Image 1 (spheres, protein in one colour):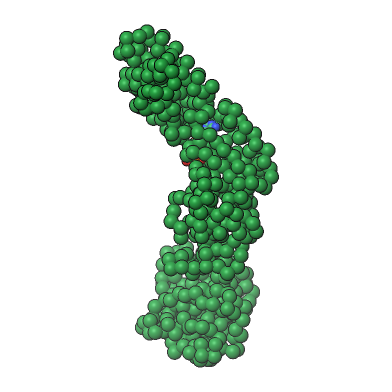
Image 2 (tube, rainbow, N blue to C red):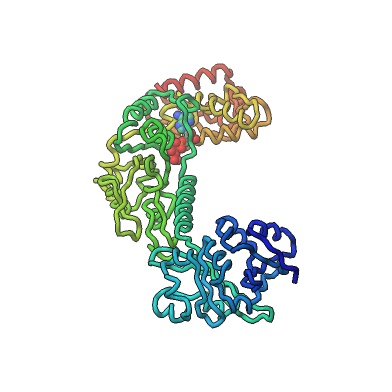
Length: 534
Ligand SMILES: Nc1ncnc2c1ncn2[C@@H]1O[C@H](COP(=O)(O)OP(=O)(O)OP(=O)(O)O)[C@@H](O)[C@H]1O
């Protein structure tokens, strides 16, 4: 034991804990009786709250002990925890403190405990914890568990039905290792849990937004190209209806730019600052699709997140939700979606209360929805509600004038991205312009990137092109019997030339193989292309 020192203020005691072997300070009263042991946390709290200063009488006497808070229990017992300054220390703490003896009889509680729990000190001091549980003061006694297990125990308890408190009980042993007291600290974590819940919800919304965010960006200026009259008309109509709330149905083959068009509408609407999310209705099984779209309530089904989950109709709040491949939405979900479209409200899975949907809905499909209606695969009422303004993006083969500008545009784009300086050989452009592009603009983009990164020379020649089948518009077999002899000969000639081009890759090689001039071959292919797009 070290010698006893005197101080007027707890603040002077605090630096002692900087010494490595000081774990606690034993406190004495004016007449030299030991009245308790303070750890650094107790002293810090007392200093922080400035509660102990001048409340300890003329002089606080203390002695530093070793690194374990070995309490001289006999001293504490003789004076009780209610003796000054220990009582002041306890009352200075922001957290509640509940102390029982080794039998489980309440010794004292501090004022923070009374405030947090609403339980009055006088009602519990001297009473056994088991009686208090029986009388309904508390739901469960940590002190009794600590007494039983002789180890620190922490649990979360409910009080007043809604507030949550974090209760940590700690056994206090004497020098012989016998249990003397259980000190339980009590912290109100209601706000903390509420904040945590809000944080979890935000994180969930962020995750959803990231997962369903649409990875196409458009500015008012190109990179996007609107060249053909069909695309121009489509985008002009989209621009006109963007500021309104009307439902839009975008139809077109895969890769024609439906998502880009939907984003264009979003960006020119009043919701431009809100989220723009996309859900592909073919991408998941019905149950999952329903949960992702409508969300679910807590405990809606086995394996559901305990707090429930917000659906995209919530997460897209204030923004636009694009339902891609709407033709694949199962009939049961079509009925639920109809309610959203008609009444702007929906029922989460397992929920009993309707939620308000504040979203703009844009739907897209590569299917013929009208035909699906005839086949009974799509609800007629929903179809008419969704397609107030139908927009159709034609396939790339029907707006061929866009192919070469797109090829040039994406070549430049990928040159920049991959630090290359590729250029198209005119014959390559010609060949690609004649391709049907079943995957539309997406196919064109992918091919261009592949060529930029894989070409061995600066110029992308027909040699470097993969086998690109020519337009499907030409029949696969000679058009015998169709038209005059002259027309049939021309058709045959065209097929022979296109086959030679596909086989040999370049106009020069194809012309050589057919025994004609390269310029003749080029002229003929141009003429056919012109007559086809006329
Ligand atoms: N007018 C355009 N100019 C330049 N790039 C375009 C244009 N339209 C579409 N694209 C690009 O083509 C690609 C495919 O477009 P998008 O994803 O919008 O097609 P989609 O019809 O929605 O396809 P899917 O049906 O498969 O979802 C995207 O990378 C998009 O940026």
